[in-house]
Amino acid sequence: MQKILTKEEYEKRIKCVRITKEEIQAKIKEAGKIINSWYDGRPMLLVSVLNGAFVFMADICRELTVPVEIAFMKAESYSGTNSTGTVNITLDLKQDISKYNVVILEDIIDSGRTLKVIVEKLKERNPLSLRVVTLLDKPSRRKVDFKADVVLFTIPDFFVIGYGLDCDEYFRNLPDICEFQA
Ligand code: IMP
Ligand code: MG
Image (cartoon, rainbow, N blue to C red; front, side):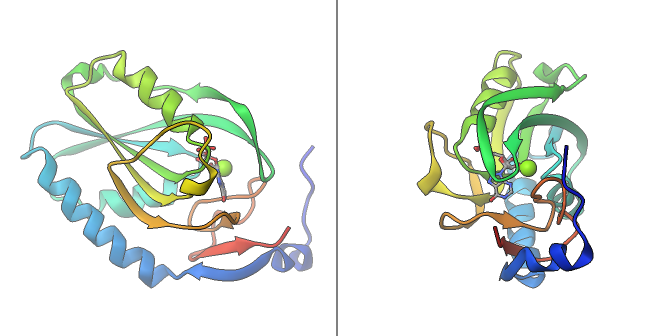
């Protein structure tokens, strides 16, 4: 079962701010412009991978000025700060994506396993096109080959929390991206 943190324990785990909310917002605006330019107003489905990308989705979708539908998938592979290596899709799309240009929004690419599984699964359904936009990328941690179309920030190998990212479901509400103190 998950440990309940006291306020003091909670605060001790936030080591330092690594990317400020202002830096995030500046990159979100740039990424929004790129996505707006992609499909010339043709049907776009923005798919956020829960839970981590929920804040990213909320900010990116408000930068878009073209017709867009939003949808959510859920993938689970982590326990605390460790990847378990197997990826389970626990929430799937209902849409027939053969009618859409699909843009997947992810919080972070670490081993690459989660997105590899999601992209393979969605490609089998023949979307008009499929692209991946990730807030963060930790390329030094890759276990399987995977490259996103757009990366907002590339970071070294440390565990991050905040702006949607968690450790054991805590810290998602922090406005900045912070380093986790183990
Ligand atoms: P991957 O399958 O190893 O690429 O991991 C992707 C998922 O692991 C992300 O969607 C996150 O939910 C989680 N994850 C990986 N690294 C971190 C981190 O530094 N902080 C919080 N979650 C992470
Ligand atoms: Mg997570």
